[in-house]
Image 1 (cartoon, rainbow, N blue to C red):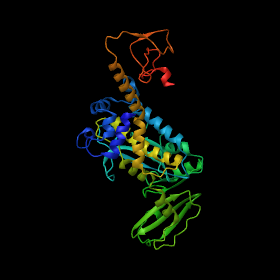
Image 2 (cartoon, helix red, strand yellow; image 1 turned 90 degrees about the vertical axis):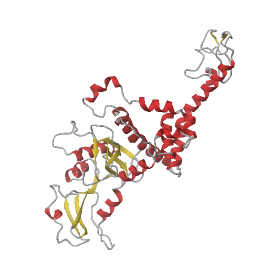
Image 3 (cartoon, helix red, strand yellow; image 1 turned 30 degrees about the vertical axis):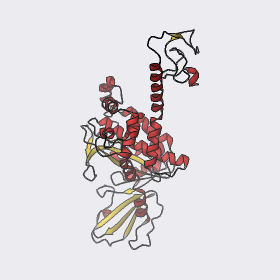
Image 4 (tube, rainbow, N blue to C red; image 1 turned 60 degrees about the vertical axis):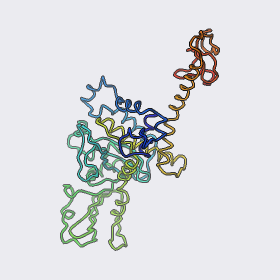
Length: 399
């Protein structure tokens, strides 16, 4: 926990430059220096792992994410259990920037950071809480033959939140008529733009020539509507919706239909979440992709913790202040243990080396054992049986 607290302190105080600079004379963040020596921190950075290395080779055969999949699964489960999303959710992709050697690193030219590990995210629209997340690992052997990747991703991410009358907003990679029908069967509606190469789109939706600017056409298939809107000359936007019973035209100059207006409002959940996570990110240089995933998980967990803390306490402070409080809480137990060790060492130094063993003065769990060590609190001679495990205090003082 103390190690993680240092990562958060660095994220809010000195996010630029090498992480070891936090111990240098020019930066010298006291909160970090008091928590842990630099060499100890570097040692943890180099050696921490997230799975059983002895069984990894066998697990990798069926799971490319095996090096950190157990922790990621538990993170997902905790996210789903800790929060009930509202009526509207958003699904989109997130690219965590990294250039580590990894079998599923992606290149996306439209992203600010071109290289990284891609994650599918489902977020609550109002709070930007991460409800569910899944890494993109390439071809998924569990996906049924003939099932589109986009539909498989949406149904997996939304599985814990279906059958409750929610709406999910997606972009043109995910949206399709077949997906809207599958979601409707689970009492969930869909709103999203449609790629014009979709086979289910009629020719009317694909033709952009001779269409009047700011004009709207509406097509319907059962309970699903397709809105075709022309925002400018020779350009149309297609929005599929099973959420809207009626499509109405706005009174503004551009005469936008309500499906377009609602989509523009609901599409930004994952993008805002990613922006929040990057603002105070624990990300640091690494050559191991599980560590990069771990950094992303900490960033997302910090955003979720901030949202939950505000919802439970009514707190209105800024996220920077919350992260500082979080870091202090994470290091609290470690610092208490560190203080007890210092007291114990001081007490041991005060006892002359030639002093003989003395009968235990606590006798909570022993039968007159002998010891030369004293409790850091009450200063009584305490044997190993009467001492609290892992601490230099007797069992009486602990109570």
